[in-house]
Structures are given as structure tokens and as C-alpha cells.
Length: 261
Length: 218
Image 1 (tube, rainbow over the protein chains, first blue to last red):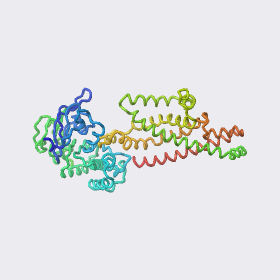
Image 2 (cartoon, rainbow over the protein chains, first blue to last red):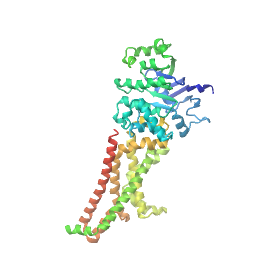
Image 3 (cartoon, one colour):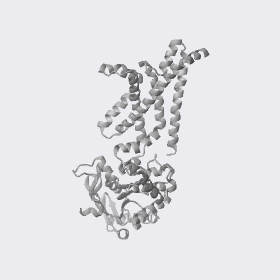
Image 4 (cartoon, rainbow over the protein chains, first blue to last red):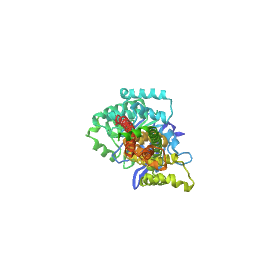
């Protein structure tokens, strides 16, 4: 298949909630190793787009392919059954705005739960990998703590490690730093930057312009449910093609978000 | 009065076998009611009316019927439809079905109060429906609803006393036999009350343990 070098191919995806068209005809692709930052004003459909990729929301039209395989629709053209959907979702990691850690499990158990219960991988291997991931995000000493006892930044680092524990082909971030106190944003961005350098394939919905500018390989700008503009961050931030992108960037210029590190 | 308690003491074997039966009856139906209630909870929360309405109907019916009447229906009423159960089976079935409705309603309430995102994370991480419920949704519900579930178990113990009317040899039945045999109503019944209290203390200890487990998680 010609699209096999693309990890993600979103083609003409539309979605409406009642009378509101949240996404209209959105298309974009993500190559292996790319970090695509999805930017845009609130309510522009960024999160819904992300949620369509792993079928948390069912798109009304359009196709989504992960490594060439159709997401959500089987070869017969019908909506996938629970098991097929489950299988494809294990290959798409997700990091949530409000962390969404499982409160009844310890940090280490949070990392091991899906690899053991969904992927059915051997316990010793899962545990070794989980411990290595905790070390990577700097939280080895918190392995037996419960999520409620962590700071927001620590929770989100666990959230990222939990997604990585699935060995996903693609990682989705839904405003991963929006719920954090400003002083905790940095520690999460450090981890994300490191993943970008390592060549993890990621789609990141964010308002962190500084991060997008420096870590993204490409930026996708959305407005009113449309993918308005896409391009290299250098060009997008210095010389956007569309007026809407220019207005959006002007509103952000001077705000603290742009030079947050 | 002391003499009356002496008579009760002399009948301790009967009383203890009643206590044991009450404990067995309550424990079995508490576990069964919790399992059945947990199984009913997703049905109550289901989006499809074809699933949620029958579950809702069952729960509301149980909650509106007095337990004594329900026990009568199961033991004396069902034989008219050709279903003849002995008093143990009837008693267990009545206690279980009746309290499963309450358990389901308690868990449904706790579920509605849970944050949506952790459950959504389970979906996003590929948990199929049944495993999602068992591994991700249910454990926090049990922790959050622990004290209320414990309350319901105490209710099960007390409801089991009604089963004396279908001649189930439980604690109230034993106390009743002792009082009618020796005419020592106060001593017999007060002794039974203390024994029920003892059973409730066991439940309370369990609730405290669950509370401690839940506390370090919030």
C-alpha cells in the first residue's frame, strides 16, 4: 500500500454534535518519527479530532488509517466489533488533559495494567519495562504511591509513561499541560521534548506555543473545525499563510505561554 | 430475670445454630446480592433503553415491595406457577434478589459520581467492555461505596429475621422457639438482639478496613 510509510492518515474526517459541525473535512498525515502539534483557538475541534483518531468519537465521515490499516471500520465496511477496536486502540497511546490515572492502582500498577490485561504480555517483561519507563520520567521512587498522592506534573508524567508502556505506534496528547499549575508545566514538557528527540510519533494538541515552535516537526492549525494551515513551525510562527492563523498568533504573542519553558 | 437468662443459656446450642444459620444465610446472600447487583449496574447505566428499562423496572419494583411480602411471594406464591422451592432456597433467593436491587442502585449512584476520564482512558487503552467494567470501573466503585454497601449488608442481616415466617431455622426463629418453649420472651429476644449486634460489628470492621484501603487512594 502506498500509504504504508505514514503512521497516521486522516482523510476527510467530519463530525457533528447535533447541529454543530465540530470537524469538517479534516485531512492530514503524520510520518514516522514526526511530532505534529495541533494548534488553534478553543472550540476549534482539536480535541475532537484527536478523539476521532482512536475512535473515542465516531466520525460521521472520512477515513482514518493507522499504518495503512483502517481504524474503526472493518473490511466489510461495518463498524468494528469491540475486540478489533480494542486491538487497534492498543497501538495508539493517549495522554489526557486531566491525567485520567486509575485511582485504585499504584503508579507501577497503572503502567502495568493495560499491557497485562489488554495486551496479555508476560508479567516479568511488562514490569521491567514499566520500571524503566518510570526511571525515564524521573518517578522511580513513586512507583508504589497512589495517583492521589502525586502533584499534577507527576501525574502527567505517569500518564505519559502509562501510554508508552503499551509500546504504541502513535502517541496522542490532549492538552497535556492545560490542567497544570504554571510551575509544573516545564517538567512535563521536558519529557515530551525528549520523546520528540527520540523519534516517537506524536500528535499533540497544545496551547504551549514555545514548545510547538521548538519541538514540533510540523504544525497543524485548526479553526472552526477545519484544518486551515499546516507547515514547519519556523515558517508557521514567523510567517503564517492565513489571516486566521496570524490573528491567532497575535493573540498569543506577549502572553506568558509563548516563552514558557 | 437472671434465672430467665439461665434458661436461655441452657438452650445455647439451639441459639448458636440459629446464629450460625443467620450468618451463613446473610453471608451467602450478601455475596450473591453484591455480584448480582454489580452485574445489574452496567445495565442500569446502559444507553440502550432495551437494556436499561428492564433493569430499572426490576430495581424499582424491589425497592417498593416490603421484604416480608416478597418473602411470602417467593415461598407461598411461586408454587402456584409450579415453582416449588424449599425454605432455604426461597429464603436465599428472596434475600439475594431483594438486596441485589439495592446494591445495584448504590453502585449506580457511585458510578454516576465518578470522574469520566479514567474510564475513558480504559476505553482508549483498549479494554474490552467486560474487562473495562471489572478492572477499571468496578474497583473504584466498591471503594467509594464501601460504607453504603456495608450498610446494606447490615440490612441483609436484619431482613433475614423475617425468614422466620417461612420456618427457616435462623436466629429469630431460634429465639422464638426458646421463648415459646420456656416463656422467657425478654431474655430470649434480648439475647438474640445482642447476637445480631455482634454480626453487625463484624460488618463494621469490614467497612473500616475498606475505608482504610480507600483512604490511601484519595
